[in-house]
Length: 401
Image 1 (spheres, rainbow, N blue to C red):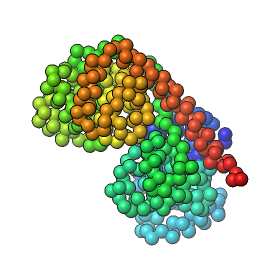
Image 2: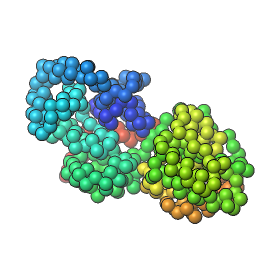
Image 3: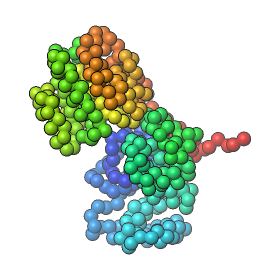
Image 4: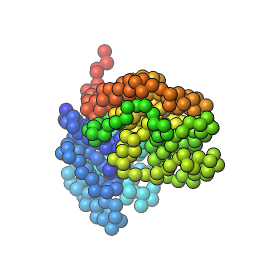
């Protein structure tokens, strides 16, 4: 497949999900362009992944724009003319026009067949690629940008309603988020659910070594951002109930961000000796902590499909999650993990207590199913295969009869 695909988030390198997507697509033979602002030096082993970033330092920006404007005008005069007219049509200051040239020049110079946008908020500014140059636009449907941002921002919601019907294809990370996007005009027939791929090779040598008989002091762990939507405060309330029943545990939260409110709640509930908060540690250290734990807890109020759940399933750590968002698409009760009712403190407390009493052979059965599921459905190979099929269908649509 010789399709040229731009996978765009605006920052290079980007999130683990996007970096995995780039690797997976490049490994299937697509030429992958990565445009945006360079956050730090980054390289890809696969030569099919080509980084085309613009400089960060102000003194380099003017030269970069002037040089590349001249180059575009010489090599592709028609493209230059269309871009020049597009930028002039925007009611903006001289500084904003310079920023537009900075962002757009290399994309127009190296026009891809498909421009795959990772954040829905960026969609409006890039639709001109389809209108002026015939580039196919793909949008990933992910998390907060679909679930909450348009609820809080009416201008953004209106932008979605204007642009979604004109998008060529939608990549949804879960069935739940695909359904949510239809509220803003995402076309079901153009949407393909392709689950997250994780780098199983990087964790193949990290396997849970317990016999799945929970420790006398049950070790529970959560990993994620320090945000209200992650539900940590609800988890603390549930653990307070377990403490009152005499159930021994230690709960470790690994999360970057301001933990002030959570620390106050821990003190108020008199759980200081039962809780540890780590503000962010290297990934391999996170895996080591998971390996030493009895249970990964995901108390979130909403998720797409949490990467940490898939990593835990691959490692062999049992997972307990709320039934929010797309989590119940991967966590099946007593089959691949354990589910509790979203926002239900009593149900969470009861489910943890039941897990503590679960026979080791039953936990081993669940963990085995979970590991097989992840290797079958969430490998990098699976992600690359399904995404390139999706791109192929966009480039070669089935003729209407």
